[in-house]
Length: 271
Image 1 (cartoon, one colour):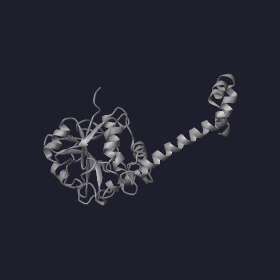
Image 2 (cartoon, rainbow, N blue to C red):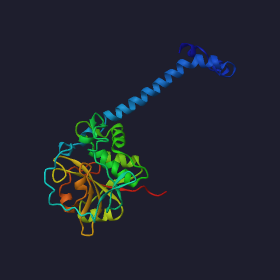
Image 3 (tube, rainbow, N blue to C red):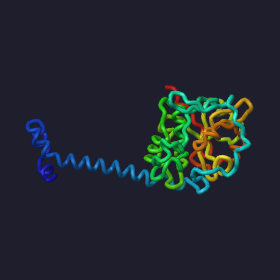
Image 4 (cartoon, rainbow, N blue to C red):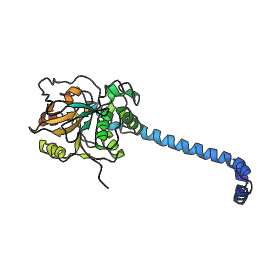
């Protein structure tokens, strides 16, 4: 480094053209130091982003841990003429919704034990699994829950031991060029209008028919009788049931930040 400081700009310029080997040897310490500094700043920025993730966003009521729901769903109907789970070209597809939905279950052995930050997808990954379904269905390329969990953790959306921060929905949607916003009015008509316009809804629900705590699900369509079709990241069976829209609205989380409890996800805008 001292050698570089003791050589003037003119001498360095001359050696660059007349003695490139000398130039490389003299400037090696400087270039190495610059690379190290750049690497340090990159790592520091990433660590700072993770450290300053929105820890204040997640209330205890919204913590997501896979488990049994508080209420039974045994009275809900399954009608194969309305929706089915089909295997198409190696993907599991839920039919009958706004568009065919690529379905993933967070407890699938293929990724249940894969990491979500320092946790695992099977127990804490309803957020990235729900977003993997939305992105895979609305974009050109499928994204698995393990891939989505890795991205979400890197961007600071993993709430260690508690699931995901609510900012995961807007953040991941934006990362894939999707439009995401709060629905506005939490009414049955607003849900109908949103789904019938070709959008999907990501819902954060609280204790009830889907969970005993907090849980992300996807609302994916409306039946001719006005029931809702969903995609539940932890239950194939509940994903095949018809749901009363008011029941789902009644079980939404009480949180009202970062777009919660109901996000409208729209396909990429044509350019």
